[in-house]
Length: 289
Image 1: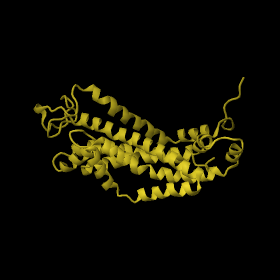
Image 2: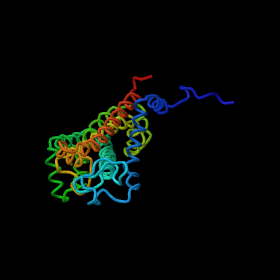
Image 3: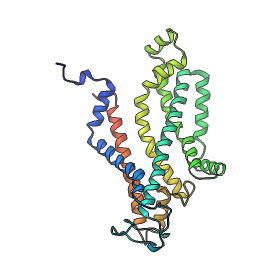
Image 4: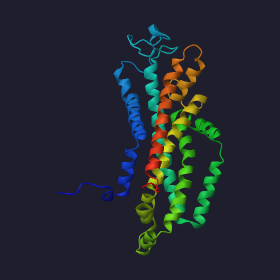
């Protein structure tokens, strides 16, 4: 008969996951976030029309659960619920893929700079400082002119600016790890710099990257929504939560539901992501026992 699993038999990562799972608010946020993701990506298939199809028999229709348009339509007869779900696909995709891409670029860049050190580190970090000073909105406008606007320009602008902070964070972590005994032993044993980087440096930056990555996702989603709200991101007829909120804001005096539905889902996602980030930060805190 084997012994029951006790905390002393678990690895550090397993203990951290157990602490995260014990955080009820974080776990509830995970469930709600998953439900919203499923709604946005699978929900439109339950309807016989898309968010761009106009139904001229239901122009500006109110909420009516007995009609084909459960939450009504906008001024062009387009189903509001379907447009919000399709807009969620765009916002969530840019949010998660943008955070992942920016995180990977920043982690590798910072790890190389911190591990190599010396002149290479100074040059790489000087480039980061220059990019930090580049105005974000101007960058989006320039990339919009270069790529013709839309999703590609917005994605490129977000990734181009948001990889900088992960690079700075991982660089400091890599500098500390580069002086550790196990790295010196690997170097003395003949392991190449690339081998040390991917075997020892990057894996030991995982917890820092995971916690910051959870903070990066809401930042990307909020950036996309804000830029689309300003009209320099996702543009009509393609929907995103940002331009839907812009439309709802313009009509809030006459039809508040145009604002509440996309705004409510965006707020719910941002709250969930922040609660998850807090849970990860507490779970991976080295001072926790």
